Structure formats: C-alpha cells, structure tokens
Length: 134
Image (cartoon, rainbow, N blue to C red; front, side):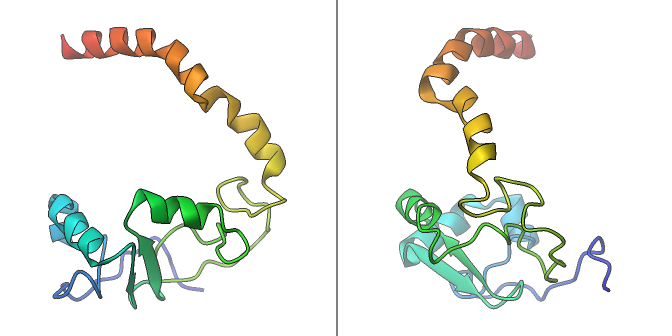
C-alpha cells in the first residue's frame, strides 16, 4: 500500500485546459487567471493527471453534475495520485456517499444552512467581522 501522505512531484503544466494541476505553484499562487482560461474552454475540462480528473468550470455545470447521481458519484471527492481503498460505502456521509445512503445525514445537516437560517446569522457575522478588523 502506498503512503498517500507524501506528495508526488508533477511535471510543470504547459497546457492548463488539457492538463490542469491544482497543486502546481502557478495555480496555488494565483488561480484566478487559470480559472478564467478553463471557463473559456468549456463547462467541463479534463486532465489525465490524478488518475484522470474532470472539473466543472461553471456554476451550471457543478449544479448539473451534483444533481445527476445516476452518472456521477461523490465517493471519490479528493483529487490525488492514488485511489484510496474503499473501507465503507458510508464512510463520511453525505460528503463521500451517494443517494439514498446520504439522505439521513443531509436531512440533519442542511437545515442550518438554508437561506433563512443564514440570514438570521448575518448580524452576528457582521459584528464578528468588525471585531476582526480592529
């Protein structure tokens, strides 16, 4: 079994649209121009790095993929060079599980993050930000 904690050195990126690498120093230093280039290329881009990885580049593509559980899975959410051993299908719902397994966790976790629930937190958040600025 390989040690997943050790980073793998990757060759430098020469073509962001067809060979992106989120661990490349250029990406980590300033990803915004790269994201603009990827979005201009299309709603989904692909790299052979990380065992093959597709990345949606628009909100619409993310939403479409997130709601298409027949064709897309949440079981491999971390993009890395090794495929982790699957110990349990229910390892960390709802992050790494698919419907219907994640439904009980979503029902518990989502209500505090609805727009109405978040609106109630805005005054406190504004106060905390003001304190942080001091």
